Amino acid sequence: MKALAALSMINKNRNLPMNTKYLTAAFGLGLILFGTLIVFLFFTATVPTGNVGVITNFGKITGEVLDSGWHIVGPVDHVTEISIRTITTQTEATCFSSDLQAVNITLAVQTHITKENATNIFKNYGTEYMSQASPKILDALKAETAKYEAAQIIANRDKIRSEALKAAQERLSGFVEIEDLSIVNVAFSDEYTRAIEAKQVAQQRAEQAKYELQQAEVEADKKVASARGEAEAIQIRGDALAKNPSVIELELINKWDGKAPDSLVANGTSATSIILPLPHK
Image (cartoon, rainbow, N blue to C red; front, side, top):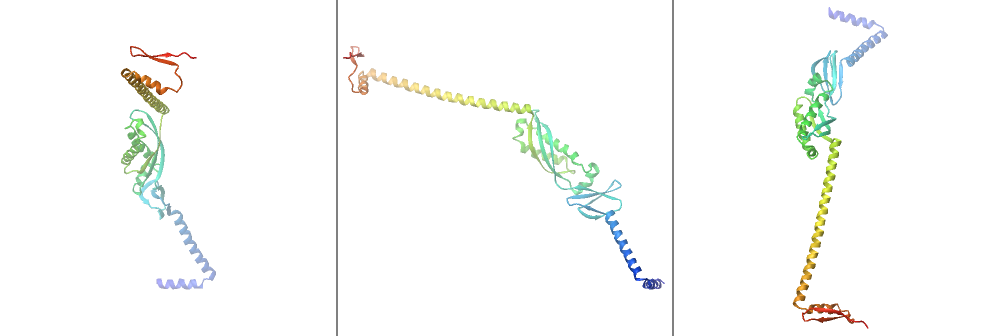
C-alpha cells in the first residue's frame, strides 16, 4: 500500500506545472536556510581566543565550561566569557615597617585563572574576582614589610618581593594563580624623608669635620717635625761650637763675599768670640 501511495504522489508531481515545482523547491530551501539561521542565532556561541565560556541556565551554573571556538548550545543556555589570559594589576599599598614608619608601595601583580577554577570563581566572585584577590596579596606584602625597619626596606626590596610572592601564592591557592609580582616604587612619608635628608647632611658634615681635623693633625705633625728638626740642628751647631770655637770662623769664611769686613773678631780669655764693628773711612 505504501509503495502504491508513493507511486501515486510521483505521478501527481509529474503532472504539476514547471513553475509549481520551482516554487516548491525554493520554499523547501528557504525553510532549510531559515532553520539554519535560527540555529545559528539562538543555538550557537563563539568563545574568543584566550577566554573560556561558563554556561548558565536561567542564572544557574551548569558546571560546563567551553573552550575558545564555536559551539552549539541549548536554547536557554547563556554563555559568560571569562579571560584566562595573564593580566597585570597595579595597585597602591600603605605598609608599615617594624619601626612603625609608613611606607607607600606601588605593586604590580601578574595573575591568571585556569579553566578548572573558572566555574567556582564565577559562581563565588563573578567576573570581578580580582577585587577579592587583591586584598590577600596586599596582606602578604604588608606582613613581609613589617619585618624590616624603614631604612632596611630599600636594601631588602628583592627579598621582600620574593617572600611576599610565596605568601600570596599560598593564600590564593585554588583561586587565582599568581605568576609574579613586582615592587614598582617605594616612597616614605614627607616627615621621614626630611629626617633622612637631615641625617645625611649631618653625616656629610661630620665626615667633612673629620677630614678637616685629620688635615689639621697632619699640618701640626709637619710643624712639630719641622720644629724638632730645627731644634736638633741648633743643638748640633751648639755642640759643635762648644767643642771647637773655630767653627764660627769657618762659617764666616764660608759666608764671606770677598769684601773687607766691617767688624773685627776678637778672642777673649774666656774663649768667647766677640765681633766688633770696624770704623769706616
